[in-house]
Image 1 (cartoon, rainbow, N blue to C red):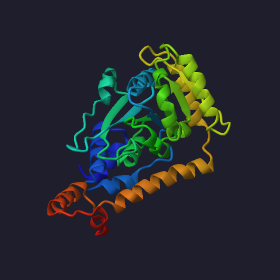
Image 2: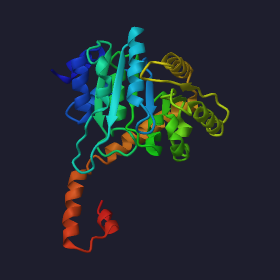
Image 3: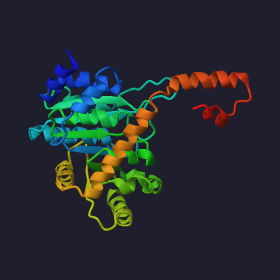
Length: 298
């Protein structure tokens, strides 16, 4: 199949063509740039970013969102970003295992991505892949980050709506989160709200949020994702945020963040981490390795 035929099939919502296009773009194969330049995104689906600490129940919450969207006849795509080993470059790609109920649903498309060393909770090609999916006829696109904490502010530059998922037991983590992702969330979710201390935890979060959001109203929803409790309220909150007209400042912020990452990625294209590791290994073996002198050559 030629790239032009692939693009045409992609725009018609063909899932096999979508999967092929993602592979081409993710690995920067021949035709990747042609695919990206052809994307029509003027009426594309909103992107919902779901982030939060490990163990907060993000995947289970997303599974509940998918069920409700599917019942409403909406087509939903999920991008699940999984961490990559810094030693083997391998990834379990296991987040989608919690979404097995949707594998045969024709209204659902799930794709796992490895971070490939990116430290911000997203894959290095997450922007491009998200836009490829958005251009293929979905009603909602959900991006789940790896759950690395403060550095996950990158999701704010990708998603139209950012959902921060917390749990009652996460009280000790809030101070660390406050200086990072607490500020960028549009919707706050207290998941596993049937556990002791959930109400007090929610009040504490409300107090923190009040001090970080400049009096902007940001919904806080208590959910129990495993039973579906609070999911309707969460969807209403997400829709209210994604349906509101974005300010010029917000649009500029989103495009600036995306442009910065795309340009940075292109400029670093000729620097291979594997080659870099080999050169460093050789330099270390010679002795008297000086990091800054080594980096000067680049």
